[in-house]
Image 1 (cartoon, rainbow, N blue to C red):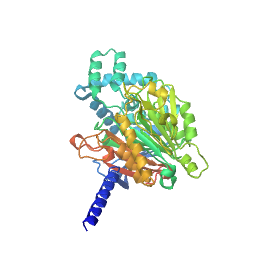
Image 2 (cartoon, rainbow, N blue to C red):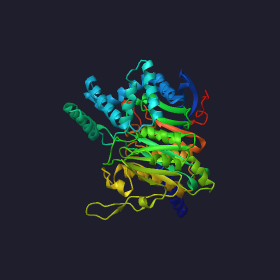
Image 3 (cartoon, rainbow, N blue to C red):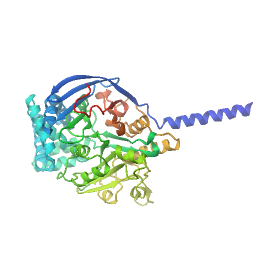
Image 4 (cartoon, helix red, strand yellow):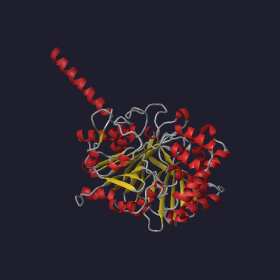
Length: 503
């Protein structure tokens, strides 16, 4: 009897250990369908809605459905969102400057950003997007915000800054010889966290029905006030461009993460390089360009190669149509690419790349440490690279102890664990991997009731079904919580990709 009791106790302990191990790889993510849409405004052919969800957001997300010519798309955005755009720009700048905020300082920062936009970053912008921005400025001006056109381009430029913001702002301000302002910004930018993002794609034998799932986390400056206006932006241009959806916030015009009607998804993560320039295509608009004018991975790569990079970023493009071909065995080509970029250089990585597999880190006085762990039928990146040229120009540490490397391994370990336990990844597992990788503090598997972390936007895509799951940071001050610990809102975009909205 004693032997049987001991045997049962051992089995119970083993079971508890197994349950604990499995639960450590999962977060209790929350998902909500959209219960309804309230129409707020219309402008020309476009409409602004507010969503009704079962979520924990103080203010419900907005959805703007933009239809027509490029000018009309921009005009409607500016006209219906002018107040929100102005407030978002002011909130973001006040958050950066803190106690040094005043009208004079804000104006000088604005002049510096305008200079960089007008003389450099706008030069390679295709005409269609220049038309949109002209329309945005005119539409906002008609609604009473004469400066909103500038606010939009300044935000595009701010998104294009490198992660080491204090150095970039120092260079920009020094051109104006504003010594006091340089000192202020150099001091304040010490507290500004660079883009600490993550992204992945998974498909084939790892997923249910061989579907493609892709995702992106934006870990950035939290609690800036922009989360009051969470935005789902749908564009349906009449010039032949593919309809697409971009997730983010009012004021950040462009794509932080997005999906097209053809099943392309686009993603970004910072990659701190020392070969940088603003003589290229601003990435938030470039990602929209890829979605709107490519239908698969080959076309996306061709468009990318025909345009120029600016500062260092990791990007990812994943293709639902290529995933479908892969599942049908009509193609063995890549389904997703990670793009490691700096000015005038891009390295493309498909799944299981040998450059990644062979990468090592050489500590001073020690043995080389293996730091690359690629897998088949999956691609992912955080904030470091694996291409030899990219690594040569990387300015942050490449040690395996870095936060970027740790988050890289969080994604790797989740993929490996699902494979080992014979779990086919479906949308809940994909959201779980997304949520694990988003910055919520030191423990990736726990959402604490605290302000830890910097995750402000988290998105998982199921592009073959035109479906997405998006979460934003919520609340402010001591009640602030990261996006991955908030509610993921589920939307099917198929009907929204049409010129006439479903509601």
